[in-house]
Length: 568
Ligand code: DGT
Ligand code: CA
Ligand code: CA
Image 1 (cartoon, protein in one colour):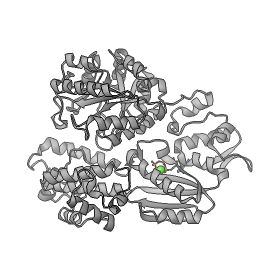
Image 2 (tube, helix red, strand yellow):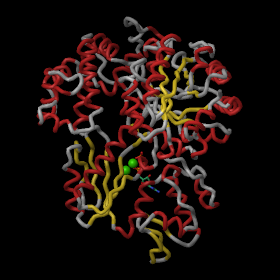
Image 3 (cartoon, helix red, strand yellow):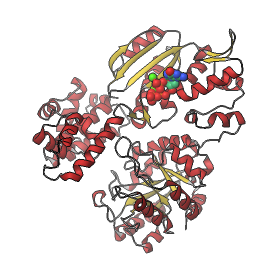
Image 4 (spheres, protein in one colour):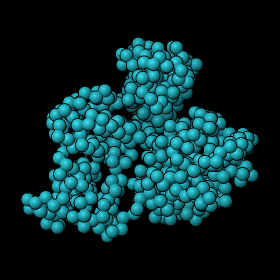
């Protein structure tokens, strides 16, 4: 957890330095933050062994800052920067289109420190007058503020899940609890999370609670009691912990996993059978019929077990009663990740490191799909560079016998639906992904036509992050999804479930709709560094929430079958 805190502060320092135009140091701090982020050991241990400066990108200077953070919880340099720019960075960065430079401009020219200030100045039309802004940008900012505000109170699953698992692990390590489970929206893999819910079986509730509230990652205690405590964790998210007896744990787990909508339905079903369901069990009169496990409760209600990801009262209750629930795809079914970036475009490492990362996941194959030509900010490759990379991949493949590297590209769909790489070159690739990265504010018909055009190109295998949304930042592009799903099905174009914590696109309900149209899916991470390959569970969770089965997802196939499932 300390690792995360250190990385966060280093990244914040980089943000401030970006405001100062000190790009040399920005780069140094970003690199250092990344080195810490990807560590698999505790940074405190590395520090104690005097090995901080051996980490890539960490010299004497930054090592000194890390030391300060480990010892004092912060660094003077960081505190001074915060004083110089007393803006709520986190809040403002949550608004799409606001980077450090614009935040600085807004602060210095208009005194904007937070969302409220920003909104006020935009409404007074003060922002359009600033250098490089204009009325279009001002209008877009206003829309984005509204969006950022609406979602401010919820956190991304991808950020909160590791925290929840950390708390669980710590309590398990204490060895006073017989069982610890994360329940609530996290267990359902909902894309954003209001708070963390943890359930514990223990015969030492007092000690467990004392320990819980004293954890390093706890920022503030809100309530502490022997049956329930609530704290605010360091990052700001709240965490509830509740203690139950073994005899009722299944009932409690079911109740606190929710969703509330499902709970209501379940209770009705119990009542219709002359029973009563609560977090303490399933009762007939005073007798507890079931409660120890979720399974025995479902069974007693003549229902099939409903996996947590489906518990949203979206048809799963009926399906469960009919014995008609899908057998959902599982993490272990994934055999390859075919949307990856390396240093060739805007990734963080070379090819080998990514291959090693894929090997650690136990994959049979992976594909490099770098950004192409027109995406200058992402260091897009042209035809020549792509072919050069393809040759390097050939060399690497010659050396490997346990995993196969596929050649690919993530080409841009231009404003008319054309691609920015010639067909002759695309034909040489194993996996061609097409995606929209610009012109996302075009209208409904134009956006739809662009995607349809791309799918009609016989070289395009996959549409990446089809709706272009970024959670809490940019809403889904308004496109005709029914038409897109139809054309995807007809042309055999795969639709991606992108596992990036900010995207999860297609989202759950759109996965379900796509499957109803007979589309096939591919679940990728879009990783820009080896550690991001770990995000795959977020994509799988999203696909499960969309009722996806193994047969719906082509990268569950062995390499040969996977290649056959592509267009050419
Ligand atoms: P969140 O935290 O907003 O992301 O969503 P949840 O689902 O984790 O909701 P939370 O933390 O308020 O409560 C956890 C579960 O407890 C919820 O999924 C269902 C159950 N629950 C909480 N309050 C109620 C209630 O008033 N009625 C019913 N039926 N269930 C409730
Ligand atoms: Ca919750
Ligand atoms: Ca809660």
